[in-house]
Image (cartoon, rainbow, N blue to C red; front, side):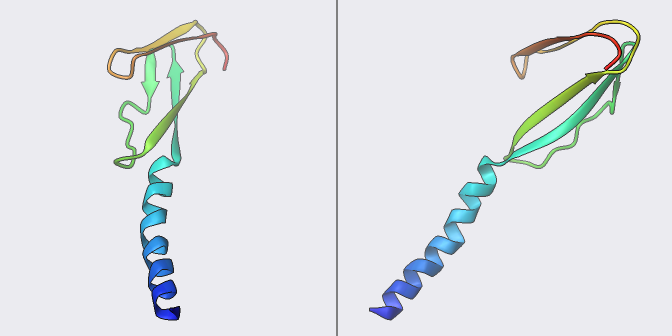
Length: 79
């Protein structure tokens, strides 16, 4: 009985973290400055939910649009 319980706990300890880590959000910051995106390429871990935090540090209003992500956001100037 103890062996069965130990094996069950071991199995859950191996399987559960994979599903928990897959559900965690990974935040990436994107800066918009007078029409330029900084950084130009976003590198994120595979198979994770990502969150993109956009800050406009330029002097003009900016718009972020991605058809692939199905998102469109407008940002005022000055952060």
